[in-house]
Length: 180
Image (cartoon, rainbow, N blue to C red; front, side, top):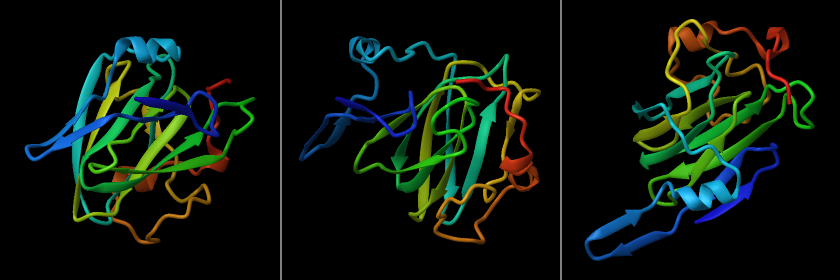
């Protein structure tokens, strides 16, 4: 397992060792000692997955304090363009984004600290995204920023979106409670 800090401080790309033979694949996504050696949170309070069709965009989501959370995400089936946006005031990358290609083939995992918005765009026919989060879902603190309010090079300017994701404030109007 290789863990590399991205351009966004405290956000990591994790490349697991993938064992493959005639039976299929075996991928280890979490190893306590390795995560702890990089000072990464390993306690997760909730986990879930989403199933999405091609051209679906989900995001840009996060929870605000006191229910803010760290999360790890990876793609179990298909492929997505994954993105994080730094919302932490005082961060050297505040307002900037990082892109990742996540797929069932590459097995990459993104470790997303509190204070980053997260979203993805499905590039395959379907995609299953898996999430582990450090706090439980709290509707009161769950929110987001408008998907196209940061200049992210989305593959499609007319993605399939939920009404909720279309209703978020743009980044320029969001008053961040997150401090780096």
